[in-house]
Image (cartoon, rainbow, N blue to C red):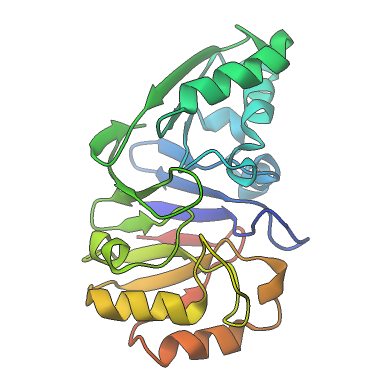
Length: 247
């Protein structure tokens, strides 16, 4: 399994970090799944060498704009490229979201076979991958996703021990860490909050990658890692756009 960070930024993207998107793929079986589809993710797909023609399924963690804003752009690009279908999977409300978007951009209606499926905090299959959902703590209903013992993605969330336990035994956990410690924020964790939650869970996680980074974190990476290291004895690194992990 390969995991490529397409966008590691936030609702305030920078030139180096686009909005949220992660590509999960398996070259041996030719499976590809796009997890979240924020602004800039289509560009990153092209830069990754995969391209939007080769991604026919999107799994959404939740419905905030920085996780969904390239959805219709993906649909249109696939239509213009001659592809005939797109599947969008996500939490409750995903069908209503897509129905409303298509109502606004009515000319895209029926251009491709658009299949929509809603999932929850349970096991399911998508794009050939076995996935388990887990409810996070965010301002909208949001799901974390676990791909066997290889990879867990937190989605947007506050830090809490239950999510660490959900990722127990995984090779990699990609976790929201949007702001440094001196920012007072809800619905996202600071480094110390994340470190304390991971330490409190006592989960065995191979490596943690920090993502969903606001511009406030730029130039403060070492400080943030030090804050986590002070309370959590684990391998923690920053995710970067277009970095691929071979798991």
